Length: 310
Image (tube, rainbow, N blue to C red; front, side):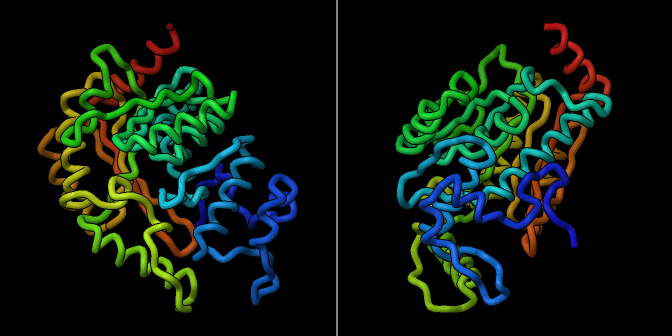
C-alpha cells in the first residue's frame, strides 16, 4: 500500500510513549483501540489538537497553540506537501537538493497554525513569507514565531490588505522566491463547508453520533470562498503571470481531482513552460497539488546557479 513520502518522519505508527514523555497532557486522550493499539479519537478536535502539539514538540522542537475554532491541520499530510516540493526543487537543480539556507518560499494563507513554514524551516532550513488576510491568524502565527527562538528571522508574516488579490501586495518588485504554496479554501459556501465537516466527523467517528461543529474545520477564509477552490486557484494562476520572473515554481493543493481539468485549461491560457500534478497518499486519503513554472529547464538550472553565487 502506498504511504507518505519516503522522507516523511511520520511514516510509521505514532509512538505515544515518546509523545507523552514530550507532552504529558496528551496522555488523557490516548486509549487502546479494538486492535490493541494506542490511539486517539481523531473525530475529537481537542484530541487532535493535543496530538499536533506533541508531534510539533517532539519532532520539531516547537511550542505550538492555535485559537479555538481555527483550522487544526493533520501534520503528516502537511509535511508531505513540503517533501514533494523539495523534490520539485531538486528536479530543477539537476537532481541536487538546493541548499536550504538559500531557499525563500511564500505560503499563501499561512493561517493561525503557521504549519507549512514551521515544518519547511525545521525540515530543510527554508525561509518563508506567510501571507494572511485574517488578523487573528496573523497575531497567532506571529506569536508562534516569537515563542520559538529557532523560528525568529526565518518566517515573516505579511498581511494581505486586499481580498481580491493573492500575490499583489505580497511579492515585491525585486523578490526572488523559489516557490509558492497554498492550501486554498476548498468550499464555495458555509453550507458546503459544514456538510464537508459533517461527513469528515461522521467518518472519523465511525458513524457514531457526534456534535457537528465547524470547530474542527476552521474559519470562513480557511474553508470557503466565492466560487470555491476553482475560482481561487484560477485567480492565482492568472495573477502568477504578473510575477513569473519573481518566482520559480507556483504550487497549490487541489482537493477535488475533478477540478484538475478546469485548472489545467486555465493554466494553458497563461502558457507556462511546465505544469505538473503531484499525487500524495495518506492512508485511505489521496490528495494532490499542481505546480507550474514560466522557466525553461535551462533557466531553472540557471536560477539555482545564480543563487549559489550570492
